[in-house]
Length: 192
Image (cartoon, rainbow, N blue to C red; front, top):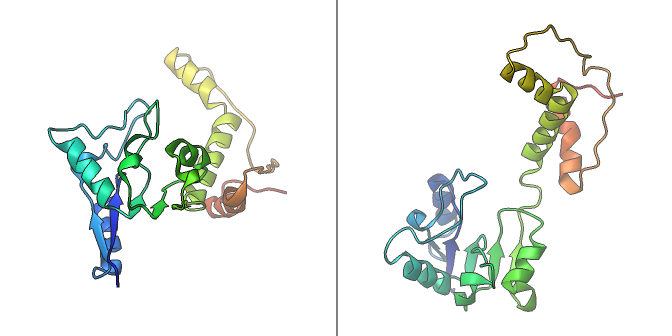
């Protein structure tokens, strides 16, 4: 049976890399070169780059060329698809997010037989929790309270309770399904 080569093109914790490797070592070779990847915790201004040291570009492109499976998409450049053009053996891309249609088109994968699968639903719990955090921040007027704190104004402030308020969710897909479960687990919001 043919051996497949998977190249991990985005940060992934070592224990998950080993878990993937353990699936079927006889049929799956995993290329994981963390020194080519951006830091795991990226700020909004972090630029994705593989130019960390001499020879990095060549190793990156060789790994892409060897892969028939990619864990995530190599980032496109501003003027084109970027390094994905070196992926001549590519059969499958597993992305780590959902809503990647624009990326698939920019990379030109929509005009190929490459299968692209997404992580739809994998982040629904954290997204639901983030939604509740944002709602509570808004309801509790956190920005006003932070401004008061920065101005060193310590005036007594009382607000209404969240309990008994109505809430609704219009999140698409699995995020909408996860929101009530998240609320039930948190036990801080009741809806009527």
